[in-house]
Length: 286
Image (cartoon, rainbow, N blue to C red):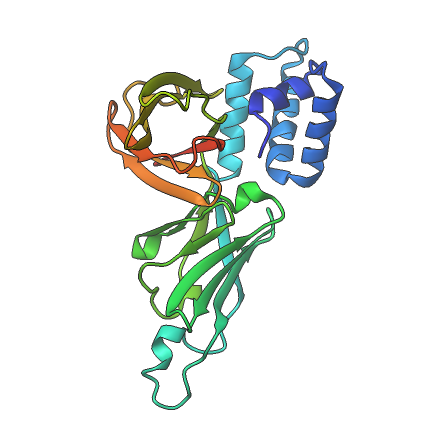
């Protein structure tokens, strides 16, 4: 995962006292162009202002704004790397000439050089299933992200392993469509839930906050019928009135995504495993 932007600013300002944290950030910057670009923008702003080195809210917000514009609002555009050697598998049966393929094979491959990401559209002929596999040496670019195909109004959410099964097939010439990856606008995590297993019922609440002033109210409920979680987005970027937001919930290999259309709307989920860390990601509509 990326370090928090506030932590990156403290690193640039020389305010990090924890040497291990400083080394961790330096190692991350060696690999991550996304965060490296943010640090360069922030450093240039600091130098341009010719002011004492200190972290200010206004300077951080300006750096965030420039960084967001550079990365097109967390969008990674994908381009074809190779074309499929034939029409997609779900069309082969109608071709009349060639025998339908068997096993697992690629329908199309797209990618991005910066950051380095590869997206493969695959066909499992034996299971009659199409799926997408997103590959990157940096998990934040492949795990629990949105893949968007605006031309056909499709959104695909990857799991922890960067995979997503397709409930319905894609059209022909899929490599000619515009494919893009939308990274989360904010990420939060929640440690395993502590509760008394001898109690048949319990309830707890917790408010999670991000550095950009997002607030989420989490409520846990344990009852005889199982363990549940409810989620309410209190504010987005400091605003209590906001537009549509997609929220993903994931644990291990379990993930789901829902849409919040208005403030105050509450989402309810069954917990896959209360003893496993819970990840929450926000995808704000443009």
